[in-house]
Length: 65
Image (cartoon, rainbow, N blue to C red; front, top):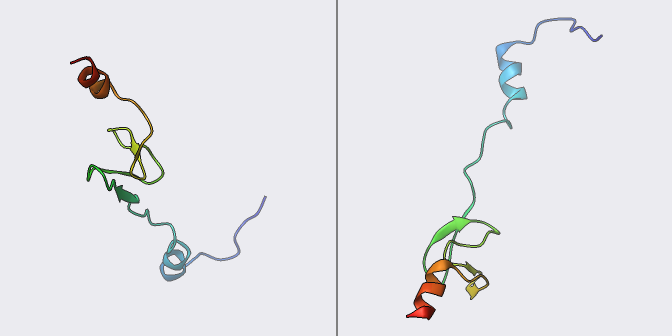
């Protein structure tokens, strides 16, 4: 089993962890509805990149009326 020869200083520990921070999630704005959603995901309205790709329950209810 590997055992360290000497203790890592706080400075070196900080340098080691410099890339470990969490990034903010990437968010897109749907051009048709203006809704925000995660990148590469369908919005709640069923749009993806400005095109309707999925029928939602709201669409079905509107079609029945």
